[in-house]
Structures are given as structure tokens and as C-alpha cells.
Image 1 (cartoon, rainbow, N blue to C red):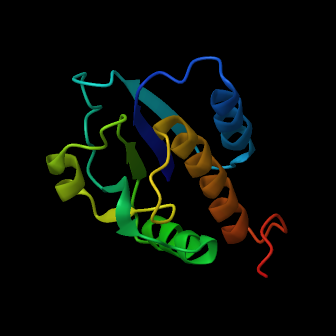
Image 2 (tube, helix red, strand yellow):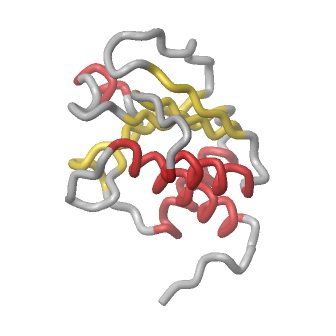
Image 3 (tube, one colour):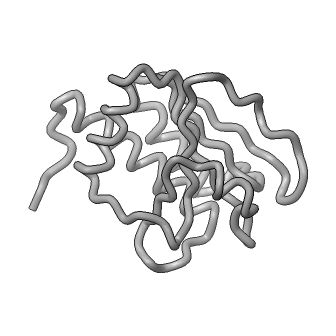
Length: 140
């Protein structure tokens, strides 16, 4: 299953960009990052069997194991892509939020969208490592 981050804004060469690259390189699943301008731009075509996840501070707060289980269930159900949408500073459009199968939050706080991208990359690495039985994640 492809793990696809579609994010508003250009991360460029930055500490956050380095973190995103570091974690995505560790993932054994196919990954892709698509950057769109803060406003406008063309969303990549939505292929069948894609699940949309909107990153939103009002979304569901899943622990790492629960997130891994959800990702594993999508994979096992034949989903070909899990697409994660990260908005610009003003968040996502209502239509993007409405189309999502999951609104996912990293807590109740609002995070800068560039940092949220790095946090998502780490959680994707963590989730895939949990599913693979890798010792990276420690419950405690």
C-alpha cells in the first residue's frame, strides 16, 4: 500500500524537511510526498481503493498502536493507497475534510503544518515498524 502525504506549502531544505526524509527512507512500504501551493494547485488524481485521511486538530486522537492497526486493516482490506492531507496555515478546505474517511489529530493543540508533516512521517514509520514486529516502538 502506498503511503502518500499531500501537503500544502513547500518544505524545502529545512530541519523539518530533513526529518520527513529521514523517516520516510526507513519505511519499507512505498511512499510519496506531493507538495501543493498554499492555495490552489491540482490535487493528484484519486485512484480507486484510496483511503483519505485529513490531518485536523479536531480529529480522532489515535495512539500509535491503534493507528498501526488501522493502517494494517486498510492494507489487509485491499486499499492501494492511504493518502494523508495536510493543509496550509489555515487548515484544510471543508470539502477535503468531508471527503476523508478519518480526521486524524496529533492532540488538541494546533501544530505548524511543516512540523505536522514531520510528525506524520515519524508516525508512519512507527506504524509500519509496529506492523512488522520491529522493536522501534515501546509501549509504556
